[in-house]
Image (cartoon, rainbow, N blue to C red; front, side, top):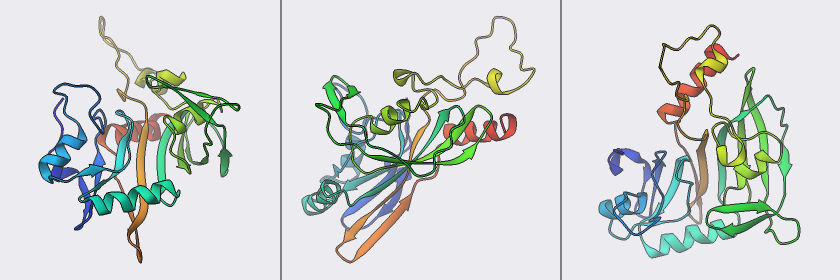
Amino acid sequence: MKFPKFADLILFENDDVIVVNKPPFLSSLDEREGGEVNLLRLAKAYWDDAQICHRLDKETSGALIIAKNPEAYRAVSMQFEKRQVKKVYHAVIDGTHTFENLLIDLPILNMGKGNVTISRQEGKRAETWFQSLRYFKHYTLVECRPVTGRMHQIRIHLATQRASIAGDEMYKGEPVYLSKIKRKYHLGKDQEELPIMKRFALHAYEVTFKINPETEITIHAPYPKDFETLLKLLEKFDS
């Protein structure tokens, strides 16, 4: 898969940090030994000392902070540790759900190999706030504000509300097909219908953190093309 040039992903840059809009399907770090392109490699080719301060799932797009030197990496990591970084995600979820500042605080247990589960006994604290933004007939656009940063946190917390992210098959989310939302939609003979989005509909929309002790900054990451297309089609055929 061809990804944009690293410089084209940059939303903000100063002497210490870079914030990029990570494209979907690009891993944050090395997943396996091998030649797969990932964000860390692209960042290091752009800036030798680049270090990624947090991760996004491979399919998730959006705002991601990269430090340009060890001091900045420590400073940003400390803000994450103290829960001072504010993150806002947007997700399209299955069904119509009215979330009015709903807090889900079910503990998450990481079972390894990319699997997590809800466990009140052994899980680690996990908190996410949800707010419905737009309603469609079959879907809802929601704002997700994680307080903690557990693996798959937003995805599994939504799944516990029977509100899985569209296309997130790992958590029983169904892909969105045009035939489901557009009346009298006909495919040609022998044509296979593809989902509108080839991934789950989750985007890291905004990140707020301190770039120095006095200055807090909020960076907003525009939707990638596939997410924008999905919303436009829902607006047109499912509202």
